[in-house]
Image 1 (tube, one colour):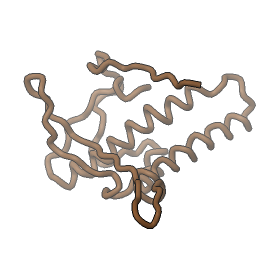
Image 2: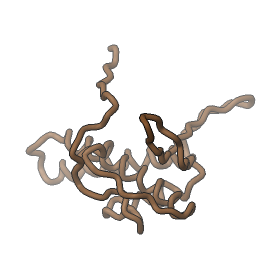
Image 3: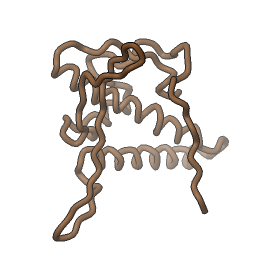
Length: 151
């Protein structure tokens, strides 16, 4: 199920709890929208061994992504310059159609997506609930488009 199909729970009030909650929310989104999507793409009717291999490949790829998000890997450099990736997770308050950033965490500076990953595999997204319900009543407001790649 995609993340937009869930209703976000109320975030915790204290700054530290909110910081951890945001990191768990990022993990939840990645597990629902990346891992869940990949699992849905597995060809039906695979043998149990092939199915297990497909699941392992998905989980290993997602863990590799977590290492990049943590800053463990994922940079290019030469003696003069460096390129790395930074990903942030933000809590946005909406009011009168405007969005205001209430809190933001650079995932490379957080507690570690790789640390959260193992709990997330077991469905543990932290002490404070990330989602209030398992199904939202409406679709996301931003238009989703499928990108195509030139061959």
